[in-house]
Structures are given as C-alpha cells and as structure tokens.
Length: 256
Ligand code: PGA
Picture 1: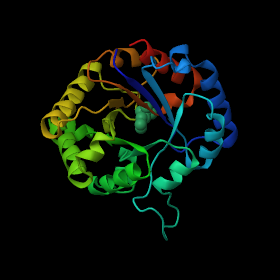
Picture 2 (picture 1 turned 30 degrees about the vertical axis):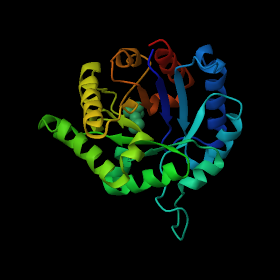
Picture 3 (picture 1 turned 180 degrees about the vertical axis):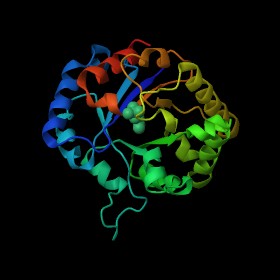
C-alpha cells in the first residue's frame, strides 16, 4: 500500500462562517483509516484555506488528523513587504504545508522557478513541507513540450533550492489546461508525466518524492487517477470546497 495524500486548495474562497461549515463537515465524515491514526493510516489529508481563515481552521482542526497549509509565502523571514505573509507566520498559526509555484501565481504574479526555490527554502527552514507545483500549458502540450517544460521547472527549482529541499518537498503535477476547466488529464496522461518526474528525480538526485496530480480532480475521476502507480494523491481545487466531493476523493485515496 503506497502512502497517499489529498490536499485541498481553497484558493480565494470562503469566509469564517463557510470555512467553519466546510471543515466541520469534512472532519465529521472522515473515513476511519484516516481518523484512527494508529500508524497504519496511509492517507494524509491537508486543507489550504485563505490566510484570513487559517486561525479558525487551526482551531477547528486541533484534534483532527487533518493538517493545515498555506497557499503561498514570502521568501524572506520578515520585513517591509506590505501584504505578504512569511513561512514562519504560517508555522506560527498552525500550518505544516505550503503550496508554492501554483500556475495561477506563476501566471498572475510572474513567479519564476528561482523565486519558487527561494520560497521553498524559507518554507523548509520554517518547518513547512512545500507542495511545489509544476505543469505545462495547452500550447506546450500540443507542441509536444510537456516533458521539457516540467523537466526545466524541476531542474531550475533544484538548482535554486538544492536537492535537500527537494527531499523535503512534495511535487504536484498540475497541467495548466486541466485546472478549473473540468477537463482533467486522463489517468494515462497523468501517469506518463508522473513517471517522468520520478525518473528525473531518481536519476538526477537519487530521490523519489511524493507526486500529487492536480487539475479537475473530482469524486468521479479520483479513483482511476489514484490507481496509477506514480500518482500519490491529489491537489484538489474546486472539489475541495464541497464536503461530499472532498470526502469522496479522500475515500478513493484510502481505498487505492
Ligand atoms: P481544480 O484546481 O481542481 O479546481 O482544477 C486544482 C488546483 O488549482 O490546484
């Protein structure tokens, strides 16, 4: 049985009230292999809400097996960076993970591989596990560049952050064309890229990280994705905002 992870990326959704309802629903419906935590549980669950509800979430999750993550952090520990949040601040409020290099941040805030590497170093120093996102655009896939694009994202990340940081990180393969489109990669398409990422990590750094798939994962397609040998779980956007669908994805991971 492989170790699995289901991580929810709430993006810029939820208020204190709606987050409370969502978390109570998820915690209340967790399958027993996740709740018992007797050492046999092979599925980790993480939720990554917006900053404004992290405190509420930390409180509600205090005695649950669900871990908390941020969706981004700054690469400096502190300073005059208006509007930013440091990795240390995420740890302080109860996070143990942070999503870095999501394609929405690469696209909208021009985050480069080298900046993402600096953020990952800051995250690991603060005691967080980075979930580092990589993935190609539709145009890049159609030009047959997927392996090169993902390979470069990975290589430049390790160039900046070091292989020790990769060893402390989780990779999320998120094809940009599959995010929020309802058009997930097929299990075979995802497996092919996951296998390539694993091969690169093994050959170049002697590492075999956990590799999540992200992009329109839902209650219906999770199981077939999780059956692929190199898919270790999912980073879930839209479907993590519904108790029913997020729990169904967790159950698919538990059963895989
Ligand atoms: P989606 O988002 O599941 O809504 O496609 C995934 C993500 O952006 O991490």
